[in-house]
Image (tube, rainbow, N blue to C red; front, side, top):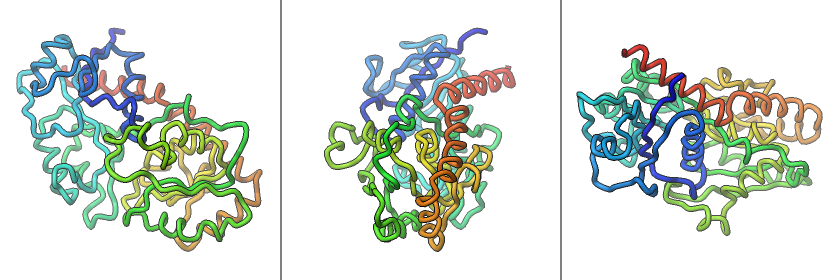
Length: 333
């Protein structure tokens, strides 16, 4: 089978944290199975103020696909190009960097952007007052669900468990359950080893690990913390996204305690089997039960770990994503 030729235009996020680092790891893994060139900001092949066609001609004239950066929606894409263009999209409720505060405006921009494919981390968005399919419907024939994946060399269970329960993350208004947990965790889990820390503020794509590690638990320290934790508490927001934390915590051997995400069951996050579904009124009792019942905790956590390590590692996702690109190519031939 001929290797696909892919030109990646996302910035080099090797030294970042969170989702930007995860995307960089995923793109590097894709390079094991396809012929890839990386020409985003921070790479040697990057050239500012260059059109996509110019970059293709200069860096990879035989590109089958160009994977665009996530801030290029208004840029013109040539109608007679020999390559296809795709982009990864994450949050659907808004696109604040474009001044778009609701999913309808965001969907309209996507529809007008002239991409051949949109690789959606989440296909649905709840909690906005609009239909959950509002963005999906706008780009449906070009939409391809591509959930998060995880670096299995970083996120794995450590032999020694330093913490009984961890709460690590942002506490914005869209996370009401997280606020309740932050307020009550030290009382609910009194007598147990607790790790609680907020995530750094601001865009993570501009936050190098080296500048944050003294104040926050990020990057390598975050992976180490999850691998050393028995229970991970978080909230997938009222948008009900299957956020990256599910994959990180699951692969690390944590018991996942969170509200149930949209499409979570299709990913293997099943309440009572691979995670515990909690709400603002139930999390304390559920946490106390699993803190006291280690065998049950480990049984559920191990099921989630097996699912994540089998289905959601970067290698597995990269191979399935490349199959998807080939399928799109075949349909359009």
